[in-house]
Amino acid sequence: MSKKLQLSLAIGDYEIVRALKEGTVQPDGMELTILTNMDSTTRHWRFLRNNDFDVAEVSCSSYLVARDQGMPIAGIPVFLHRRFRHGFIFINTTKGIEKPTDLIGCKMGVKQYQSSAQLWMRGILEHEYGVPHRSMEWFSELDESIDFTPPPDLKLSRLNDDQSVEAMLAEGELDAVLHPDLIKPLIDGDPRVARLFPNFKEEEIAYYKKTQVFPIMHVIGIRQEIVDEHPWVPINLFHAFNESKAIAMKRMVNPRIVPLAWYRETWEEQEGILGPDPWEYGMTEKNENQLRTLVGYSAEQGMIGREIPLDELFVDVSQGRKRGDEFRV
Image 1 (cartoon, rainbow, N blue to C red):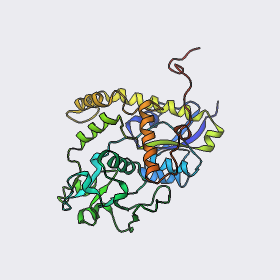
Image 2: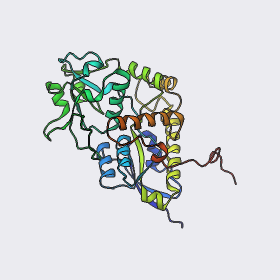
Image 3: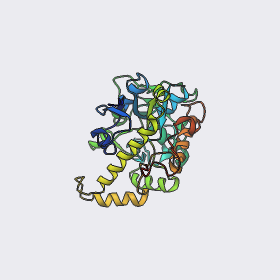
Image 4: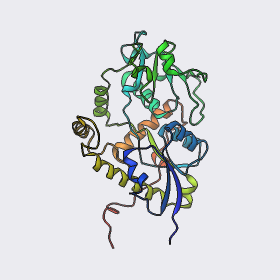
């Protein structure tokens, strides 16, 4: 019996990886131990700081910092998590903040400064709404996934362990918060907290129509020694992720899958705006455009020292035109 390469893979528990997790799809030549029972910030830390996994879904922002610092990690263009972020800017309603430029000079809280969600929204606020990121005072709750030296003109402070940006926003100690998730005061209906963009969906659609960017949050990282020893691993993993996603997208067309009354109509609306595969993998024109944007934001915001070319960031997973689509003997 041939021996398969044993690898650990840490990822989120998403529909687009269900076929991989359940074993319906198996990457050629590999046997995966798949770990999904941890939150994303913990997974990123354990992969980037501890080398706990062979392959992992990791914050794209932190991946850029890791590569800039020469860490032995390679990436493949598989993007398991994307999300528009206009709806995740929260304000204290007593501060007179009515439009984005009212954030200039404010005290802004973040879970961690380095996360992809915050990197995207700082860049979008600056370039789309005229709010320079250095015009605000920043307060970060968590350790960064990768340590970096902030630029000298960036006002960035770390909160004490007993402080949370959500509570500080509600109490008025912070004026606004960028957060990767919906915050508890908003969910609980606290009148002291609201979104900066009440019409966030319309803002996000307009942003996409202007830029063709559906923001990439996470990328797949692989320990460099695995790529060096087994150069066939990245491309085989890439195709396995693609196959798993294709199975998921076909399954999700069925409106009975999700217990939502207007699910099918929402699916059709998404397809009309974002196209048939918003989660496309690979170095497509759209993906290259937004990856260059993200690299530019990271350099502009002082997290990396230069704008890293994309061919330095990702392993080439091409196998030539029209190959692999049909098995030939």
